[in-house]
Image 1 (tube, rainbow, N blue to C red):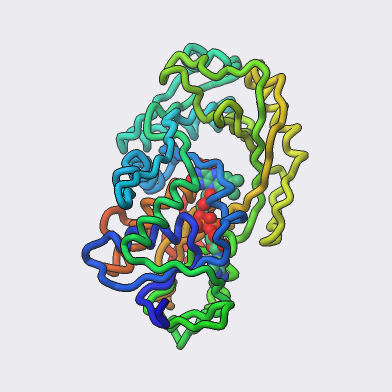
Image 2 (image 1 turned 30 degrees about the horizontal axis):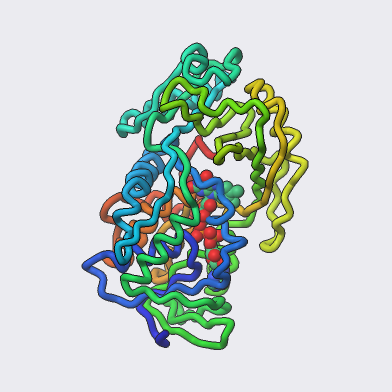
Amino acid sequence: MRDSYDVVIIGGAVIGSAVAYFLTANPDFDGSVLIVERDNTFSQASTSLSAASIRNQYSNPINVQISQFGSEFIRDFGDTMQVDGEKPDLNFHESGYLFVAATAEQEQILRENHAVQAGLGADVVLWDADQVTAAFPYINAHDLRVASYGQSGEGWFSNTGLMNGFRKKARAQGADYILDEVTEICRDGDHITGVKLASGQAVSCGIVVNATGPRAAKTAAMAGLEIPVEPRKRTLFVFDCANSPEGSARVNNGRLPFLIDSSGTFCRPEGKYFLTGTVPEDDPVVDWDDFEPRHEEFDRIWMNLAARSEAFEAIKLVNYWAGHYAFNTLDHNVIAGPHSEVRNFIFANGFSGHGLQQSPAVGRGIAEWIIYGGFRSLDLSPIGYDRIVRGEPFLEKSVI
Ligand SMILES: Cc1cc2nc3c(=O)[nH]c(=O)nc-3n(C[C@H](O)[C@H](O)[C@H](O)COP(=O)(O)OP(=O)(O)OC[C@H]3O[C@@H](n4cnc5c(N)ncnc54)[C@H](O)[C@@H]3O)c2cc1C
């Protein structure tokens, strides 16, 4: 490791590693990259604790396009990320999301979202209740006004596989990784000059990237900067199902979708089990080290699932854990790009519940901004830091 790098990335989970990959993959970049990661087990990283899924079903065209690139990238991941002939397999289950609407308001949102998605070529269809029953007979559709289903480009995959693939390839392309913690960021006026590490080492740099997930505000504060991102707890549960509906679908080779119920509870297959969670009724900021699961949420989840399907009446909890959303309190969406004044401090933070799937497009975008001083493939400036300064939310109606 050297004492000076062109780019220092703080945080080496999926976002930091995606930025490192896209930088080092770009023939127009010949600089040096250091990734500093404080915990190589990633046991508290949102990346490892996530539901590991991707959807095109957003309301904002930029989010749809971000995910469209994400699913293409995930499909091709093995070939793109191979190192020494070894191809990582993300085990992408392209099984689709099924959003169901039971109220007039939900119906209007799904219909408006669908128009945006269809306009961008996303493979999403709108169904009435009879069509839902015909495709997925286990779902109780009597109260449904409409549903939207992603026929391709959506599903779930290996979260740690995605992170490790980016890491391994970035390293093979010349990025340096170090196990250490950034404890200070050195700033001279409107310019970041370097970072100091818990080990006592100092590293100077031309650009620093904040990829520290739920700790993003703590990291920004080291440079005297602010970002409206805080840790919010989400608990996921895995259950076994006595009368599993697996294989009962009449579309997509019998595969069940990622169901987003009108109650806010979601559920998808996880191997022979099911993975589920819900929107918390109370959602306070939590301590960075508080990972105590909210076990009590399971009763509400069970009630919602059993109302949606008889198959979910007899279920048994087999595992559960809590992770942190890096929750953007302004608008629940990523902040990607430089600080408005301290231009060599780059944010890639605040993804809330959809950062894993956005890592390819945001990693690519941040790399482009560093290399060319602007976004090239997809204009991410509407999700930049300037909107935070203006207090203007980036509108996205489909947040989970
Ligand atoms: C329960 C749950 C379900 C989710 N489901 C989905 C989903 O289905 N689909 C989806 O797309 N997204 C989902 N997400 C969101 C997604 O997981 C995150 O947006 C994404 O993983 C963020 O990655 P990250 O690299 O920014 O953050 P993290 O994975 O949290 O990584 C940040 C890294 O920074 C390191 N770090 C922090 N401070 C320092 C420091 N000072 N020095 C050095 N290193 C530091 C940490 O150790 C950590 O490894 C979910 C999240 C949760 C919690």
